[in-house]
Image (tube, rainbow, N blue to C red; front, side):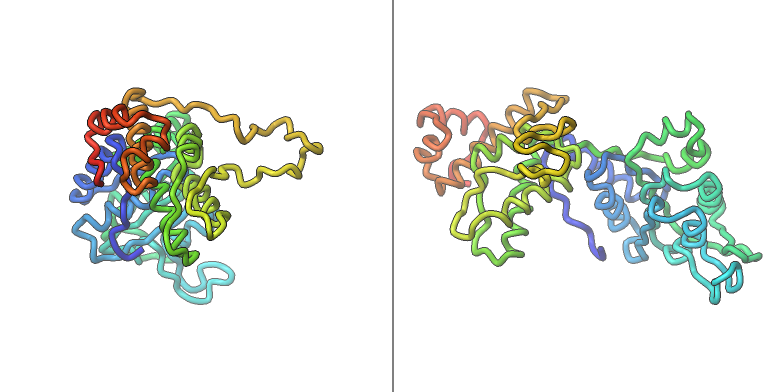
Length: 335
């Protein structure tokens, strides 16, 4: 990732966070990006870097959950030759490599208390010591922490350093889950379908049927945008090349009559039937319904090549009612 990553979204809940990120990017302060898995924390953290004065500097990322305490220590702060068995040469840590730029500490809640204390010292004083080193090293690194857990609750429980949280929480961006962004589901799905169609050398990206849209809109998406992308790409990959409409989106990749743990013809007791989906909670019911209506109207128009009568027929609506709905949602029949 070497440029400002593209952001897809028009839902007010999402745009509010993006605006907050644009304002925060100008301030050279540590901060936190929180959200459920698959909500785009890394993309937003990168946006904070590329919209800041540090945009020409390095952008370095570390997944704190992927390394043991010892490895994370030496990976962040570096080590001198001979610091431990196998350390044959000096290793420059991520904090040094990110000096003049930004360091993203992904899954920061997984870092040990000892590593957290060292991170705090670098943020407070701009200094670190390599493992096995004696002289302090000055760095100029902006730290962005990312997590999919409630760090404030972790700090209250004693599982995360409260003083480090205080320093990181100059400002906190909390990303909305996909179920709280009803207006973004269709644009995201269409974008993923276009990308997958291009990867498969299809001449045109397939369209989604109203039934497929309804299926996606009624699903809770616990894996958020990442799960949606997988489902859409899977649907495009499975669609025969001579078909241009996706009638259903295979959300559960494990769905099979031969699913492990299931008896013949019967799903396992702890599984959720593919066609049984929970209605997700939304903060704005009327807004969610209106967003779904707009999505159906747009898809019907595109599927009918903007022939309004055909679009109305595809939705089972009368022509005049269809026209009233277009006017209600300020949709141009020609767009």
